[in-house]
Image (cartoon, rainbow over all chains, first blue to last red; front, side, top):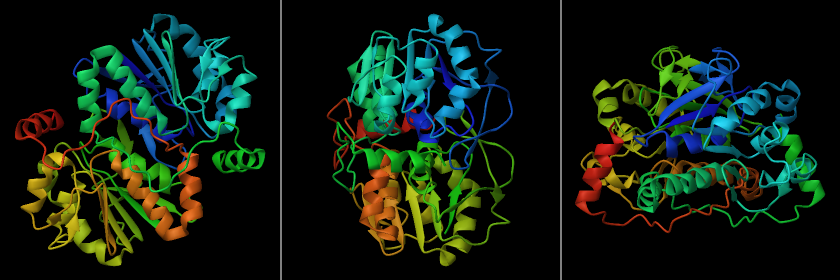
Length: 207
Length: 207
């Protein structure tokens, strides 16, 4: 199973590395780290990753993981990720996004009229791009699977492991990465986040 | 605040990127990705990261994050991480590890007689190296903070954000990364994992 992990400048590293850690150790998986060129990609807070292939080279994948970014509007303006998704999505059994990666799926026409989730601070922006926005942490709609913000990529990937290789594998993988979370705070994501919080989050986010 | 994220071959990427995502966006933080040389570091399942500095160059840090590895015994045999920790730990306000990164702290003499946690599959190995092993997800013992396996680095880093910058910042950071987990399975890490599970996990782990 060829898994394409999409890299682009200023992407949120954890959006990618959550699913990578869950999927990359499965013995059936061959991982590809695909970007516009083979140059190093600087992620959101400075951590730099190396692609192994390019959008021009990789023309199919069984599973695609598209991370989000605080600079998602730059990624939309750039357009290269969405152009690649338009070409490769039809070859994939699963096309997935984490966080604002959903806006790239929408730009590629993959979410038109479909249920999808995203980071809580960009729900309106995803709806404006044609998706039927859900507040769920993970949304599975046929072959398209979307996750809420950042850490939700772990939940998405574990859900996929269960669907692809069965619940026993999913349960072992969850135990393996000790995903028995004990967040220090009781923070529930509000269904209707206050507008000032959204504005503040987007200002921090976009830096 | 200078944060040193330690990179070494075959390290578990999520052990590092969980804390990175939580700490790296704090406006007071300058992140350093430190390794033996500036050559690319290939992590556990192929994702490759670029260091920004070397163990020889970076001789102090306010906060140190040491990730684990399925090949932790190779990292101990190599010895370079522990040698650097011995030198730099006295300069740090916080020295932290995720997963089997605890064994490197132990090798550097930082955990002698101290409470510490680690991945459930290597508790005995950490105890054999002098730590008082806990089954807690995060253990704070003065300036030394250890986390259980892989995903527990997120909990560790959020705990640190609260201690360093206060609970309001901690709560916002947790909301920002949407750490409101909904793991698909009910998997609790057993206090006494069965020996065959430990053996199996270590065999998968070390690949």
